[in-house]
Amino acid sequence: MNCLICERIEMIKQGINPYFVMELETGYVVIGDHQHFKGYTLFLSKEHTTELHYLPYDFKMKYLEEMSIVAEAVFNVFKPEKMNYELLGNGDTHVHWHLFPRVTGDTPKKGPVWWLSRDEMWDDSKRPDEDELRIMIDDLKEEINKLLI
Image (cartoon, rainbow, N blue to C red; front, side, top):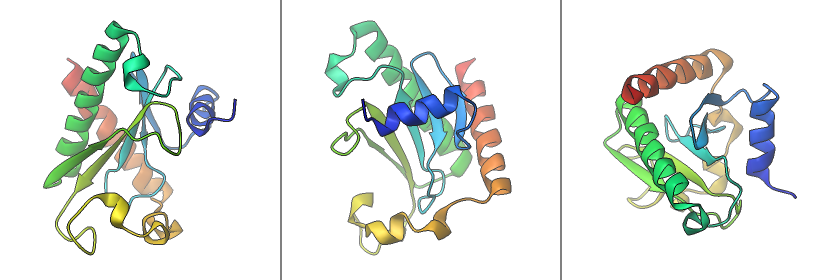
């Protein structure tokens, strides 16, 4: 199987994914490699499937609940004006959520994040340095743990 999400999960299991935040019952929380949208986070399903509706019902309901908790934590930590929740799967066909904190002016014109050019969104200058990444991970982990209580 050639699945980028499964490869990232394997890196988490091996302890070599620097963007890993924490494991929840149904998935893995990771900070996005590029941070044009400060606080961009992903929630990767532990189940490799292409569609949300293919997940077993109880797992799916728990996955949606946990995604909502992760999104709330992202909102609380990064203080955006709005959150965008996206489950696309056209490129990486493994169920995973993109959680985008949004603020006015983060794209040249109002609209979805994908209207931003790929060159700008994925520019290496948008990667957090080691110290910034550690702070983001620690703050997000702390907030998720508060919300799980």
